[in-house]
Image (cartoon, rainbow, N blue to C red):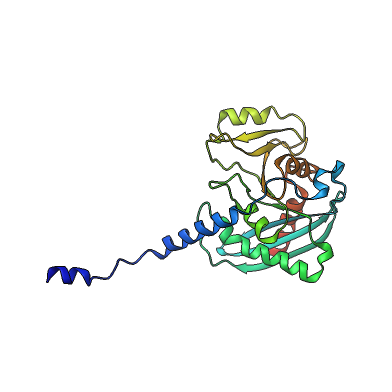
Length: 256
């Protein structure tokens, strides 16, 4: 009798949050198998990036009072003149929660929609590469927001972060800061090598006047060496123009 009663007990329900994370892990793993971390476009191997005409930048800027509301921004600049030729800011509601290591599932859908809107309006203005305010393979599982966005859009992407994500033994410690001080001229950089032995990114002195490096990592369809050179060529100040000008536009947009 006791055995029968025991068998009739319902199975314990799984935490919906846990189910979501497992689903995200599976999807992230599937997408990661499609990742390309080498040059795929002709212009990437040309002197002065001949053939590159349009560079894009994407970002989400959150409303201070409510972290479920944000402005999804896409900007496209001409290259090499770095003049704005297209910009789009759209207020969005974010349904997915923030979970460390899974930021892409919260932010990427709105950024993909921004790219789709541009394609529908005027595909001749589509960027040939996207600079993403975040990380690429410099990530806990080697697949950050720049990788995720690159796979879903099919565009070459580069992760450009203002702060160092400390993963695989890479730390913002005294040794790292000393290396950063040795970067004397704009364009100089050093590789970020993890405990695994893999090179996950680079710390770049982006302009002569910048005191802190920015952190470059491959997103999709571009090599690290090419990504570093391209980002540096887009920098008048510390932050590259596709993301710097976009941030300025968002501030104006939010005040309207």
